[in-house]
Image (tube, rainbow, N blue to C red; front, top):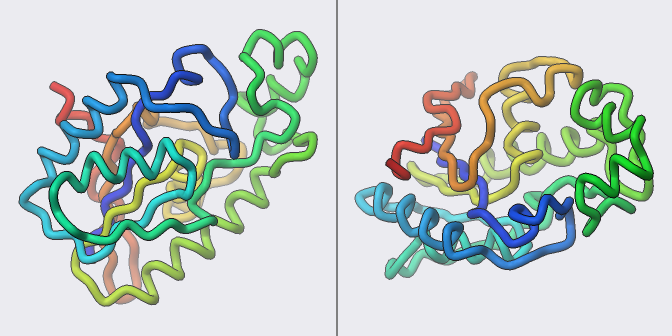
Length: 201
């Protein structure tokens, strides 16, 4: 089984430097174009299942990737972005002004980060681990597509590579519509492609 995982296309709030989390904003034209390019690069793959975060930016990305095929896109609540609590909708400068210590911890020392009304990294990883293994254990297909968000994909990396929360934000960087591919065997999950953006060349 191969699982193709991508981040949603670029959004208006991405351009404005706003924290999105469980809130949402629309794809930009670049985000739409990049999603279509990824769809074109994957057009020869028949996906048995397409799973998406329920948030509009991810679901719309999934539709553009799917193109004119008729595979159902299944919304999965636990594929939504990390909950950023009180920060959602704020731009980075405002977060820096009001919560400098926790903003620093979020990006530089995630093991020390304390969310206000949102999720901790431990809570995120726990939820992502459950949904990832639910998908693996409940699917019989050969090819699966997951459309989700940066922190969710980073959580998958940390689960598969078994590294600590301290290293949560280590490379690779998750560009919009970047593609990660997992190969799932009987006893092993291996990342065979990491955050690839060759479809944008």
